[in-house]
Image 1 (cartoon, helix red, strand yellow):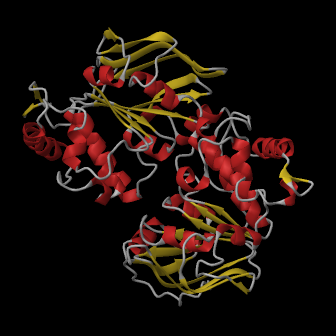
Image 2 (cartoon, rainbow, N blue to C red; image 1 turned 90 degrees about the vertical axis):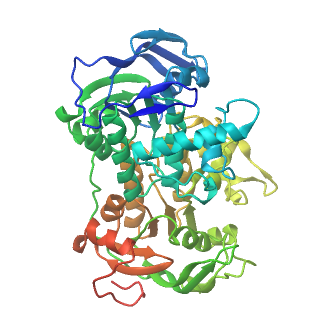
Image 3 (cartoon, helix red, strand yellow; image 1 turned 135 degrees about the horizontal axis):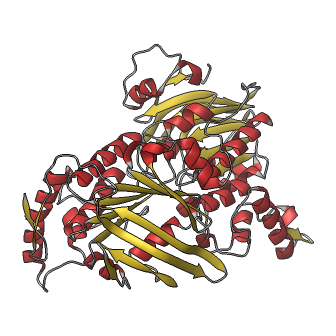
Length: 540
């Protein structure tokens, strides 16, 4: 098949038969001796890596290992302090993203770079317009976009507004943007961090199709299952250095985890059976209506007892977010919510986060950037937020004792193994996993009776996942109640003592982890319930 690009160049697509890479295949990318420092922090140290054409090459490592920095150098966001970049055997100077695009490199970021109130077509041509008049560019782009969509199974309505698309479809738009700009090398940074399991599976089918058409793909991820399922080879980074590069077929999740962290890692959650006590949280007939008048939570009942973890499974957008928001105090609702037997105000008069915290509710929100942190503020300030009226942080009951707050923040960050251990750095300077640790340290260290926790390990590496899971289980073992929301079914199954599945704002059913599996939960998540369920009382 011949496709005419936006620049007028014709390129022949490779045959659609699968390609198997061998050691004799030419190199698409070669990085030699790449180093990059940000002040005293050495993000990359003398890194060399080779990626063969027509392969899917994984790059894994803990948060802060330097993966994204390395790829940002390859994409022209950063300039390396030293080292050489070769594309298709030729040394290139990548001084900007435009230079990377000209070299045939495209990148799909973890947080998409799309204009939400633009259409798909407008987003795809943005920055690649031909001339001052948009109409000819749009017409030409529409035809090419259809060709690319058909060839790579990336079907997206070109006239749809991005803000109306699911996260999975928005990701397809980012891939189309790269292909429209003639990318032969595609970098994906944590591409499944915001996808449902079904969307992730579809993405990997797309990546296999791209590989079969001769594209080279670099996949940055912390999920070892994804590495084992879709990559041909994998490079492991640790603390800014390249630890090893291996063929995926010749390694295992356990071996990769040990290379990433420098020690053996438990890939299964170790916990004793729960010993539930009295009800801490009781929810009866809770209904939540959003600002547009859409009913997001539809009369649900649930209960969480002391010393247990109730996991809420479901595809994103089925009411879990609104459930956490009304429980956390920044969304209004109707119905009854009791905390330790005391009924909470849901009218908005007293249903704020401050009053919830005073009643023993801690909250780790789903979106740490928008709801859990103020990225421009320091780590010590973020650890204090929400609790700044606490006498512990006051001097003579009048002003904040900043020296004491900084020391408290440092101690909490040390206990939660936050890296770098510097409470004065702004939150934006930490990797995603370490940002999550800051939020967890703030909430867990307050010893709440009930912890609300949304997507606890989204975008977090294997070592940090192990640590976060241990902290959640430890809190449960102290007799605290945990309400856990996650789109990761393996996380729900391994952490939860009981599982409730939400679909379309309702609870479809409850299951015990030992008596269910991903298939049954997936059916419930799709709104299909073939089993008999008890009433939505939360009793199991």
